[in-house]
Image (cartoon, rainbow, N blue to C red):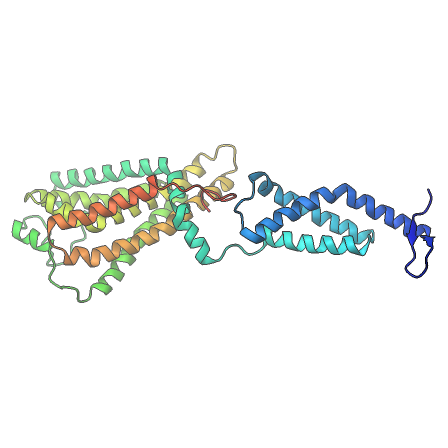
Length: 357
């Protein structure tokens, strides 16, 4: 094979390249031609990602991105080992560095993550737990019925289930006036901020415990739901004896539609992990539990927000608003909001964004 002819920078004529340089040039050209299409595709994807994130990038390109990155990294390794031309080496080094940042580099900042979480991520994660939510809802209703039936048969169960403090009027034998008074307020707005903090601590503790116990195949989570809802059944029995169920329901609805929804989601999240461990399908148990845990964790981040909202509602509107109708309006509005957000609000996921992102 005849050596390539190279134009001289210093003369008018042309000179033939030495055999070793000619061989290296041919090898570099062949190497580039064989892989250049993949490098160009990777570069085009990177340009679009650097300009506008994941918007406008086809799913096929996103799926191919990791493989294209590994191909470019492999090409760079070969280029270094075989001492290819400096231009190819510099191009590949820059390309691999840019691709690494997009594939393995820092993710979106907190503000962007939180925005995406509220604008679709949380609601999608909740909908993925629909079966667990149905089971948890059934258990919660059953727990309420069990609490009512136990205390209806034996009043001693009231003191076993309901943690009444000394002097609390809410006890068997209380008059209608005493029970109505317990649904009012006598502290005004003073000290309600501290009360809200205390309620948030208690409510979030119950939710986190219901979630954390899910590893034991979800059984302890369900038992915790039964126990907590039995308290509600006890209260309903007590107030029903004086014909105050409507007033009690209004009093509870202010914060209860948010708080009970959060407890429902917590129990469902724990059960979701337990079900994945008990029925992993074709996956290994730990892999199934890890995948379920990621989905459930997204839900639990939102539950913490719900507990903050419930604590504020319980400490302020519930204490300061005494009209039964107004309480129903507040509780009904919150319930409608959560139902609409979780089940009607369905923004399209961004390209490459999972349901539990």
